[in-house]
Image 1 (tube, rainbow over the protein chains, first blue to last red):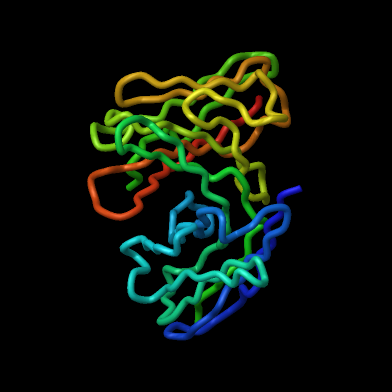
Image 2 (cartoon, rainbow over the protein chains, first blue to last red):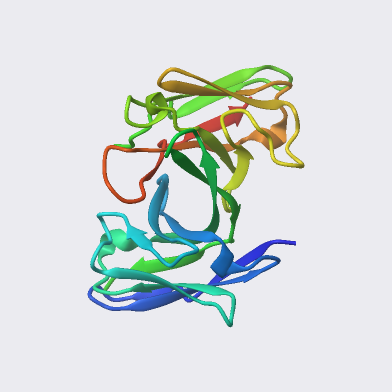
Length: 125
Length: 113
């Protein structure tokens, strides 16, 4: 059974750093694309970052240069290092497994087939 | 402002049929990228409901169906039940920027009357 369990959230002051972890079971993190998606209180879903099975990483413009996605293959765990945190980073952070969908030619689409339960990050003084 | 546009809310009585629209543009849905739908019950994580425009993962009732046409997509729920009350999000991919650009709709709150 596929399971994703996030930890590491909490209350942090603006400008601070936090590292989120996502422990996976039932599949191999390094063989899959993995993502972080966040949801601000009362708001919709916002994609944050992705790491490909080959190791390439991408970020939303809102977090580029401040957040770093990584994984530890030996622990089958995904991470999100968050630096220079701002009030607008306050959200529940979900990790999710990404599935590619071939749509013809060199076109690929993506969706999230499994999600963790989320961990709340609150940035406030 | 979300890249994909959904109505903020829809409602229906038990047993009725409701639809939720998701409108995009020529750089996402209209470019041929698939649309996927997620259900988020109150206080829980999103759950995949429909993938690849119209496919249901194992365990999702056939009361839920999806379709796509042009730059829009729709989620239909028939035989509405109280437990369907949730937020629903559409998601696709956008090619207007380089890199990896998954985009979501703003979400639609379904109320079962």
